[in-house]
Picture 1 (cartoon, rainbow, N blue to C red):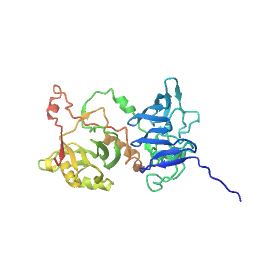
Picture 2: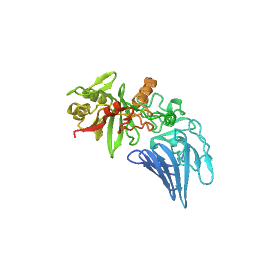
Picture 3: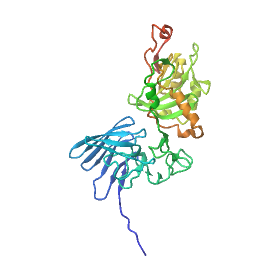
Picture 4: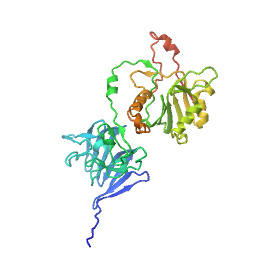
Length: 377
């Protein structure tokens, strides 16, 4: 009877967060991996240390340190795929197929490759989700099924990568695809003059995480503020009558804090996991104890921030509510593929100073009133 012996090619080790932290080839030093949030930051293999420098979601450079230190600039596309490694001596171009396959001789100096992911040193696959699932760029599919398939966000085809569209989509977590964002609109709008508008623009503290659509014209997202996890609601508000509660405009109607709170919970939002709440809407803090923010604070038992009066910003920033509504309409047949994702290109900031010209826009200038308020005080 013929027997087969098994040969160990590589050992993989994971940390308690299910991140790949070590891969060891027989007879070689351990290749240890270190992460910054969800991104690979450093890999140490014996005396060789390679570190990645990046700003938010943009790859910038790689430092290679052994007997000497060598720093290389990284040229990437919008998907974070490394296309060129620029060293002091000569550039090294890198080519990929649409599904990420590259020749063995291409990109030897780059730690990262297709979509800014680290290729496995043994198989050449990309272990997406920091080691969760192996994507094979030659077969153009995953080697194992998605645990979210077939009834969850993984979709019916448990092995497909980005539903067959790797050019316009990417899958950094190995679970479900996200759209590739374009910065062309931002570049085109840079030359436009700043004008007042009712567009709400929220301070960028990282990128928007876990976007939920509460209803038409209202979304939620998560961010970090002063080291604490914050839940944000973004919508349009109304000016309340005296001694009456303010509300938010959702689905063409005026929602009370109680109704909004119930709808958010129905969307799966767990208020307990957040340190505080912010309602980014005009008049959300107007009315004192009768305001929308005050009522929401009572319901959530969390400190809640609202705004007295209107909120203004510059017209050359997009309205995130409208943009997300556009995405929703486009992908309405499979809306869950868009929501509950992370969007590093949606950055927001509130205009805290009067944007009107007192000489030519005196009426608007003196009517402008920006004031934030927290409940309970």
